[in-house]
Amino acid sequence: MPTKLAGELKMATSIRLDDDFVEDVKIHAQVASRSAPKQIEHWARIGKIAEENPDLSYEFIREALLAREEINARRVTKYVRRTKRD
Image (cartoon, rainbow, N blue to C red):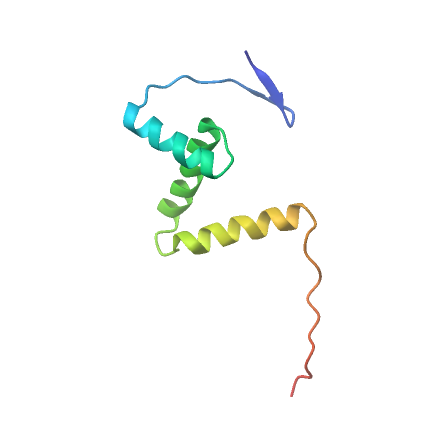
């Protein structure tokens, strides 16, 4: 059944995945408090970024995504210099 998110019509797509991979996904999803499909989406997102930016580490990618979400949630404050410039 199609769903509407942010003004776009989203359709679910069924794909076949290796059983061992799906079991691994379920374990990681449980730890991260995600559904299995959301865990696969997360890995795909990280993998796409890593392929497009092979010089970036996983940790840098993760921190950049976290920073973007903090900005979107307005959980940041303006930087104020605390020392005088010379």
